[in-house]
Amino acid sequence: MDLNRDGKLDVVVALSDQTNLAVLAGQGGGGFGTAVTIPSGTTPRWLDAIDTNCDGMSDIVASSATENKLALLFGTQSGTLAAPRIIDLSAHQNGVVPSLAVADVNFDGLADLVVGSTQSPAYLLISNVSP
Image (tube, rainbow, N blue to C red; front, side, top):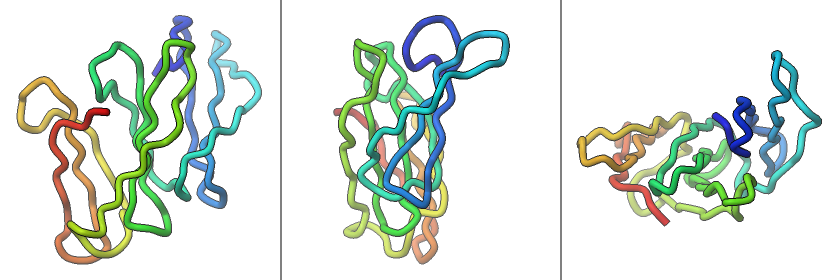
């Protein structure tokens, strides 16, 4: 994904021993800049990037390694990520979120989240993720 919209691919990494993500800006030619840490609001485990709110900027969805929560970080005009919006899944499923996927599963043109669980039910569908 090109988070800062400079035409070069960037990398976002989950720092699962912390409550941060690391963003490495692409420099072209396969090189990356110094990692910049961004608070994720959870202990991130799995990440996915997609434009969830159809504003032309990449957003990050991160599952927690220790809680039944997701963090949604929206891309900003300045090429950074906004403060995390925490989605607590406890009312819908038990366990910890071991995996997630972002796709338009109902073909309405908006991003949906499919969230795995360590307990039953095995997955949860969150339709039309938006701010």
